[in-house]
Length: 290
Image (cartoon, rainbow, N blue to C red; front, top):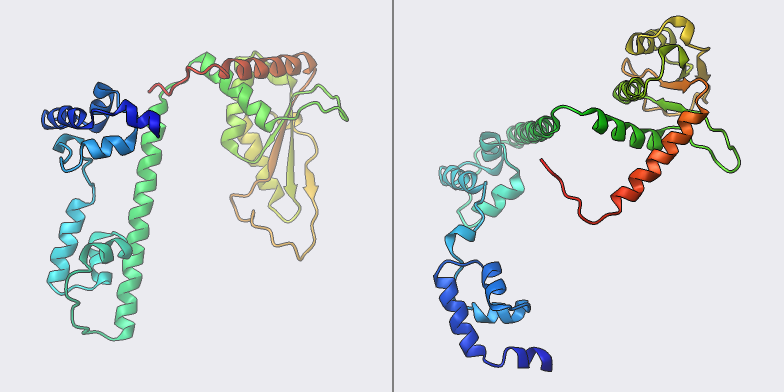
């Protein structure tokens, strides 16, 4: 504390400088860096009473919704009706209009319940639209993959999902299993990039015995484009009738095992590539580049 006090001994002089910079339109960060003030409490005291310039204030995306909600409340609408109209949550509406008078109740409980249900459906629809919009923007950020990007992605994909040699099972063999068709497609694209020949691939379907096994076998054969002779015997998973499985329905196709023949050397290179990535990633100067 003594060190801080001595550092800012000329507090009034420092405050005069801070106020002058604030009135020139500088932000807190700019003032802090300009005056070398690294203590937030001191900075707060220096700027006390001087509001931040408008350009530093973040715009609130919900300001328009708030004003519309207040307008609708003044017209006598309930939270449920406002939710249906605007598609925002009732918790936000409550926060925005709680100082306004409550409208007189003019409907039965059944009518109110129906309105509330429609309001919740509107909220779910809005949230789903937001989710899809976020996913679409993220998808477009990727663009095309260079061969090197696909190469690095495939190494990480294999090391996360592929089989690895263990002290108790020192098998050096490239085997990949997954239920996600997109993961299988990505893995096969990676193998093509590495020059693995199609006749060096073998496939096996693993699936619950109660599923539509022929349909699943046909699905994986079509996805891979491989001949039926490249597929081994399907492994059926048995389970108790009391098992409450969630992976059911027409989209359940089990897992596909992809095995590369004579792949000991490839496995060793994959392991080396992975540890090369680990070493390169340990450098501190990485940043996301759009």
